[in-house]
Image 1 (cartoon, rainbow, N blue to C red):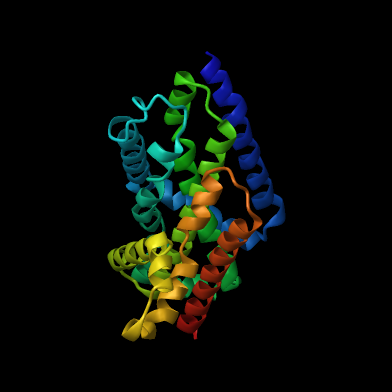
Image 2: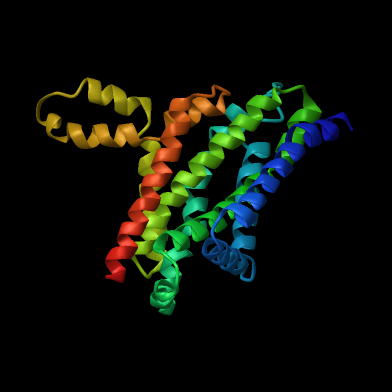
Amino acid sequence: MDAFITLLSDFAVPTVIIAAVFIAIVKFALPREVRTIFKRELTSYFTSPIAYVLFVVFLGISNALSFFFTGVLEAGEADLFMPYFQYLPWYLVLIAPAVGMRLWSEEQRLGTMELLLTMPLTPWHAILGKFLAAAVVLFGMLVLSFPIVWTINYLGDPDNGVIMAGFVSSYLVALCFLAVTCVVSAMTRSQLVALLVSVALCMMLWLSGLPQISEFLTNMKGGWLVLWPFIKLANVLGVMPHFTELAKGVLGIRDLAFFVTFIAFCLFATSVVIRVKRA
């Protein structure tokens, strides 16, 4: 019972507050055009099997692997970073592109993109509405991961503030991967192509933040120096260091600024691709 009460006070209440604030922003602060696209896109997720399949796959992979293969139950420590959060971005490398692959590819395949762009709205209205709808789906996936949080509270006395930070940082990583997928989806009419290319880019985005890459840059010599600018750029764009800091409960403005800037740039790149197609 204590674990259940803790789950309500430390996670359910903040989640409800965040959801209420988001609903208020969507309803009262965003333009009507954005709300229309948002509702249309969110409805399309749940009127098809896509969202339900992705929910089952994500929850099955993340919770099952954590419970049975990472030793969270046998570790004897009330901590989720090592057994859960350090693996979560690896699942999101696949799940986030799967959620976002249809954002623009489906419009192009059905021939409705031209109709959408001739409506009395700007590309930004459509981009923001679609992105927010997909972001809600990813948010729902993380919220439904509560069984592992309840379990760790039942078995011990964890620092729930750090656990919440882990979920926030994981969500920011998911939004970065979703933003990358949004750009790729705007470039092609094939959902499969959008998925595969996005997964590859997200994998590079995640792995480029490895400490080994930084060490390689430091020790780079000879002909490898030709590749230095490209590898350095990839290393700077790597999300792993920023995720790790936030997931451990270290709230850094620099890390938050990185995620916000990266997402904003990808959405801007999406608008550029759409404007080129529109022209």
